Amino acid sequence: MEAKTLPGWARVETSWPTRQMVEGLRRWFLPFADPEVASWSASARWLQRLTFLWLAIGLVVLFSASLPMSLADHGDGFYYIKRQAAWALLGVLGYGAVLRMPLKWWWRLAGPGVLVCAVLMGLTLSHGTEVNEASRWLALGPLLVQPSELVKPFLILQSSRLFANWFHIPWTARCCWLGVFVLVVGMVLLQPNLSMAGLTGMTLWVLALVAGLPWFYLTTTALAGVTLAGVSLLLKDYQRQRVVSFLNPWADPLGHGYQLVQSLLAVGSGGLWGTGLGMSQQKLFFLPIQHTDFIFAVFAEEFGLVGSLLFLVFLLVYGGWGLRVAMAAEAQPALRLVALGSTVLLVGQSLLNIGVATGVLPTTGLPLPFFSYGGNSLLASFLLAGLLVRVAREVDRGEVIPWPRR
View (cartoon, one colour):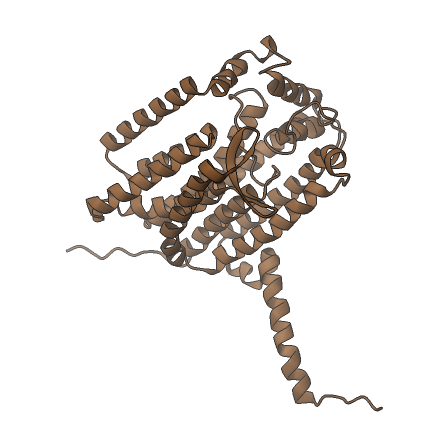
């Protein structure tokens, strides 16, 4: 039977959607290969490059840190890295969606997003899955959802919209959204997650400060936050023990100070140049949760003081570009607050995590963005990075010319 050959017009008609699909997938999954990137501002291009460099380094470090636990717990050395890679693909999709939609559309979704996450956080208090004595996750089949991570980009968007237009919004709307913010921070604190509640509250406070809200509100809020944190430390014995053990972890090296002692041993063992990729000894079941909260200790052991300093320089450069974008958006307060909030959460959380691993700060449960294992954290980090790049693109579109005064 002779095979039939499609006519030329039919071949063109069937191949064109395929080419469009391939081009669309390439732009979604390889944003740095998008031809439109060449027309972006220098800030947008460099922030995108740094974001994917951050991810690449993080995946390599996570594979090294999680390999022993993957083999021991699941019999598969690639168990954690495969799941992290799958979340990374989802994060790239979210990142691409943020880049391709104007921020005015995301501001419309911000309010409902905050409210949905608040409802989900409420459900974690009654139906949450408990991990390490904390109920922060909702189990949706095999998938664990952490609303306290996913709410961060929506909080940045909604708070920037509220604070940038503070003096033009009715009192009722102001009070309602401030109440929602307090509710969100309070539920994070009840999970319990003091570190995440503190980071979220401080970020909102910094945005309100930059937006120029009256000092009375700022001072009152700061005093209330400090008081609430003090009450939490008094009521939660394990939180109080963390602060005490942080001051002198060697007083109880096999008890409350065990995590920090093992982390310090890992950091110190790295020396100047490190032991080499994959050669960490502390990750061999000495250092607890080495693939999440204490992953920087493994990084410091394998790459040494030089590698750690280079990573700090990387964070400094990333934060510098983020602040540059925020300063360039001075004429557009809402955009400036989005850029500032995204930078604070990405770089500030990284510095807090490093401070914990090196014994500068009390032990907390904050992951290291793009490094620590956890799909929700990785997805939230991608969305925040996407918001930052999106602001850089929108700021570069044109200069706002003020109307001349007579």
